[in-house]
Length: 68
Image 1 (tube, helix red, strand yellow):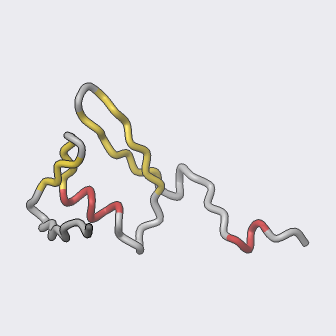
Image 2 (image 1 turned 135 degrees about the vertical axis):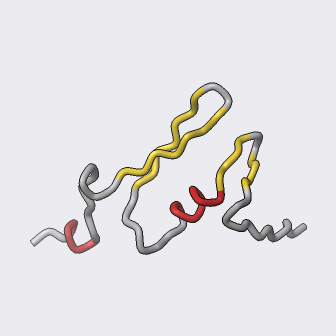
């Protein structure tokens, strides 16, 4: 059985498994131009996304892992 397709607009809030996620956060998470690593911190009954950019994270590409 196929699920529904939901269109989330910029002023919407998605509630998933009881947690509210603002559409602006979703937009930032799925932005392919941003190089961010996301951590999700649970506090009380809320999940707070925390982005880490390249100034906080070491990025490796496949080429970086090739032994020479």
